[in-house]
Length: 374
Image (cartoon, rainbow, N blue to C red; front, side):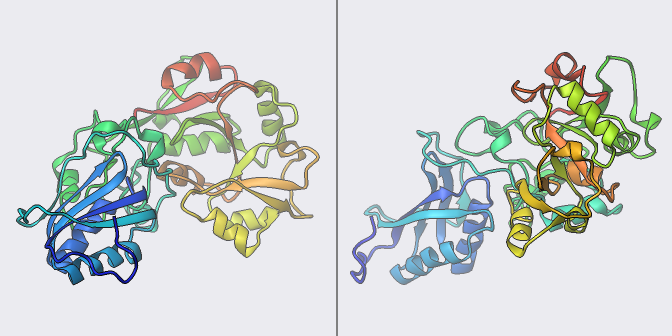
């Protein structure tokens, strides 16, 4: 444990730092590695059931400086609840600094929430010259799925739904490169080695994306929504039902099929400008919409809002969110208008989360479904 404030630590070169909080799945271990390189210390870092454990060889002043830097230079998604610096009696034994396999102990650390796609990943998805161009599952240590793919703690690829996907050589090189923002990014993937998305009809009849788009299955979904179809989209944590929010007849049809008489529908828009067309957005609400967790934010409906009353019957507010993943960005970028994005289920039933349930549970609601295997 840390000594009382102002009391010097024992003069030893072997230290252990315990970090608790939301520190798994946020690029914390890679940031520790980079700090170790900068401070010139040897040691190791690992995830365990309590958070992150760091062991290092250093002089006392260096260890204290390292501890301070952990807090001030933590990754954007990290939330540090506490740190403990302890001097250990055993002699120094490390050569270099490394990230070691996680320790399987009792789970006491919180799982990081899924995070809104970062600007760097969006740029890759949008660039035809990038190898992840239009890849709907692009992510890095600063963004992407966390909570929704975890099967166990510690947060490592074998304990996630990404376990079956073996990295290609290019992804492996990024994963092992300390200078890369995907250094030890557990869900790392690309077109060559990662999950795929594909379009199906919910009635079981054959279809293919090239019947609806010249690009791919994800773009086909945008085309179908634009033509008034209702599409079940498997996103990060489960299925949503999507349709054109500007079409009163389509919104009313979704209500009829879903057996949802009056409860308001959530909306998704490609950017804040589209949202401002329909709602008043304060600075605080803008920050909430653009935050890493990308929540649904209730906004005051503008007097001149032309969206159908059927979206939120009798209410003066609308629930808006921004795209939460590259998949959603790829769909919404086709629209200068909002899209209904409501839970994929019949009213009062649990949300559908599995591909195998789509035809049985959503076949009477959605015309098409976008599935994936992550």
